[in-house]
Length: 106
Image (tube, rainbow, N blue to C red):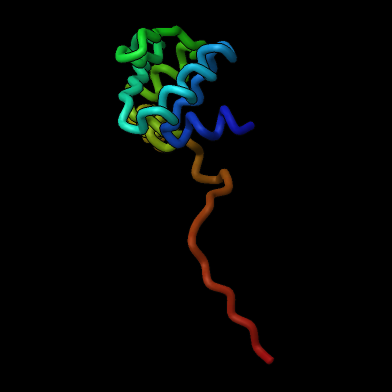
């Protein structure tokens, strides 16, 4: 659940081998200004100053979403023309969702 939700918010949950993770942690503790580069396009994480470059798994769809900056609404809006065409063809007798107000009397 975390991985899926993180990517929808633009976070990249990079998974590397434990030894690589430990090396990165130790290097950052020794030098907090260490540059770590996460390349979504290449699916790599790198810390050139300490000679680390590792690939990480990232499925094509998630990679596409991250590179395009798309959330669920953005993905839906890419189909806006098709949605509008469907709504135009939709029979008027079918139920719709509209704003309404409710009044109660006492």
